Amino acid sequence: MSTWTDMRDKALEAMKEGALDVVEETKQKFLDNFIEAGMPAIKAYAELFSATVQEQAKNETGWVKIRDMFVIPLAVKAALGVGGWVLSMVQGKTSKVA
Image (cartoon, rainbow, N blue to C red):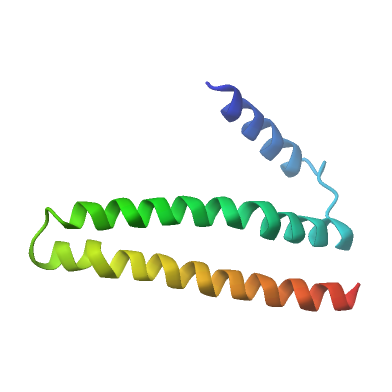
């Protein structure tokens, strides 16, 4: 197994055994860090994925061409937009509660 897999498995096992103390501050920090660091990484991957799919669409025909040129990129963009909006709303409400 890879080092990443070992680290992941150990972290998951520790969480199952109660080593992760989830308090309000932990939730807020996780949300802040995810929005600041996680979302940009996810968006970069999604943009690259969509661009690659659209490039492949040039060699396709019929439904597959429509799917690759429009449907998948639009769905990815919409999911990221809605997800980012929801996280921002939650972050705003959470900071008011604290």
